[in-house]
Amino acid sequence: MLPSTSRSLPIVLIRARENIMAPIRKMLADSDITEQQWRVLRVLAEFGPTDASTLADRASLLFPSLTRIAQTMKTKGLITQTADQNDRRRQSIAITPVGQAVIDRHADEAAQIVARYKERLGGEKYEQLLDLLLLLDEG
Image: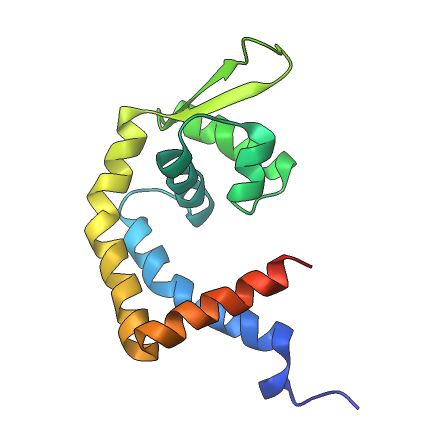
C-alpha cells in the first residue's frame, strides 16, 4: 500500500524545495538571474574555474542544460569560457567580476535566508537534515 502523500518522500521533498526556493527566487528576480544561473555562479565562486562536466554536476544541472545556460551567462558577461590548454575539447568556465558582483550583492540576503531556516529547525537539526539528504545523494 502506498503511503499517504503527506508522508511520500518525493512529494514532501518537492514541497520543501518549492518552499525553500520561494525567497531565493524573490531575491534573484531583481537581478535578472535564474536559480540555475545562481547555482552556476555559486559553484564558480566557491571552486574557481571548472570544467563543464564538473560544473554541471556540482550545480545539479544536466550537461545539455548547462551548455544552454552557460551561453546565456556568457552573453550577460557573468562567466567566461575558454578552451582547456591540455585538452582543447574541454571548456574551462570561470566567473567574471560581473558575476562575482551578483554573488556579492546577494550574499547578505542569501545568508539571512539560510539563517531563518537554521532558526526554524535549530542549528543541530539543520545540519542533521543536510547530512540525511546527502546520504540520499550517495545512492
